[in-house]
Image (cartoon, chains in turn brown, orange):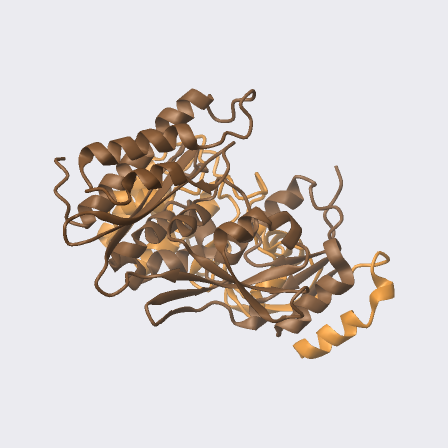
Length: 302
Length: 176
């Protein structure tokens, strides 16, 4: 098996220094945050080309801030830090993020794994990117292409270009919009794994906004899991927007999401057949929608 | 200091592919300051076992699946098999060897013995560290909280019930 033997660990203290490493070493360099994912890849012999590790802890990106109704999460924030964040726990519109952080097991991993690492792996079965996608998050990216200038982009756009961006950029922080004044929003996250600290076979994250008449003004539903693409369920979302949030409409949206998601390997069952995952997806989306509707104090006939 | 390291490595491109850099890391291990030379990709597990000589930290699955390598770093449990030693520069590390006092088992260790919370003992050092960290931060945990704290450990002998009993008793009697 090819061995992982990095020859250098460079401690960067500025964005320019990180990008200089990418320019100089290309795919021989990798940023190391909590080392949880890098470690797994390296132990499987999948990183033989990596010779240089870049430690970005000197950039002080371990912040959680609230600015003008936006939650700002530095890429070095650990999952445990996010799980403990009181304002995230207590804000219904951000609840999916708190639930997803607490769905990562065990605590040893939560204590070291970072948010930036979690998103930049691009793995479609990790919990937090799913929640962040449903919360319509944006990221600040520093890349060689922009000569170090910060570029803001939607998380969904980033994830769709991740393989192109991986060797030439890094995530500085992630922005999540909290509830806007006058608009009631709530979110939720539901995960189905085969064991207590499994990756999600199917996980669902949702966010709902409503007006005073309980009519849905905005909806987002994201699904992820083993063998699935991480993506928004736009058809299911359209079933909700403009309609009064009743149990019937929530069930219809869940049904729609279950038939909408793409399975990457229809012929190879990964942690369950496609029909099993479609059933679980329906259950997870329905639970998440009901939870969000409950937090919006909607009487949907439960 | 960091800038010096940065410049020396960035200007030293011709070395890439020829030899590995060795860097110094300072750790406080079980209350003792250690200044160690480690390789860039070296895990804390290897550093503790091979350079400090603490064999109580167990190597088992080696990718964060079993918990046998768990140590406490700056008050938090981490898997030492997936933590780079260089990332913990200046950290306070506690291993199972740091629990005993003058050759006497800590009350928590003693309760593990009395409650038969171990059989082969291979997973025990890691579980003790998680239990210690839990009780340090939450002296009165519920069984659910204890189970959550132990969720990153695999024990193939005991079936976990006696481990939970020992930790519950440690909390009840405030013996850590």
